Length: 324
Image 1 (cartoon, rainbow, N blue to C red):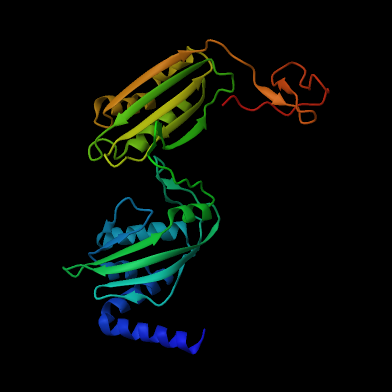
Image 2 (cartoon, rainbow, N blue to C red):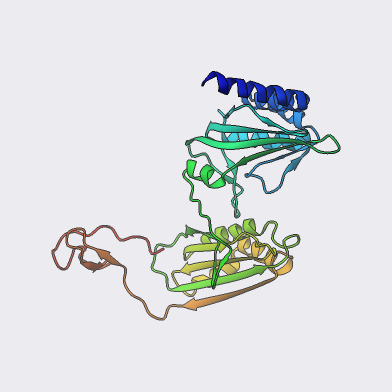
């Protein structure tokens, strides 16, 4: 770094100190407290203000809520460290370029019905910006900004940038879970629901959908379940579905006796968690065998035939995959 650069940085810092020395000092103390893992001190510096970051659906308000969220972050990244550069200073705002360092060893907040994501053991070094702003009442509002896609990829997560709609297509997320049965599926069930009011209907809808998946997969005869849903669009509309596979049409009736399933279905049918819902059950009409490629010659073979070898070259075949 040359003398001119140092002189410019020193001049920038001096100008900031002259314009807003208390706020600049507060920012420095906040970052120091976080790096020292002195979370009560960090929360006290924000006081009755707010803290926002991309892991939150909405800012947390007040010292107690800020402290609780900081503890969540430190539980997820016990060795959390923030490197920061000289901040930019306005009359009531301080902004600093920072880098978040840490190892993901504990749970962090999740989405789409999963309250938390367990530790991955991965290390991160994510570029971010921290801003501090004083409002007219003198309350401090701290905001941490980073690219959610970069953060997710650093943890080995899938990250997609997709629209809610694109022509006739609608986009969301899906997940699947295997049931207890390993028999071939002979029946399927589909349930669809729509929510139209963000305030009244879908605050906990993703968690309820996950409850549906878990209750279906706990039922004898279930081969597996796939669930899909989207984030609410600009109008607050949300959709979700479950697709379940069963080893017999009779097994689809077993779920009616499942107490956990009765509970979550009752939440849809008797409470305002969905605007509309419908279900259908389908029975197998025709089937085709699972076909495996021979690792030697490439010919497709019935995965479940009595002699587990290629009909063309007689090489052994790999194990048959699950049906779901």
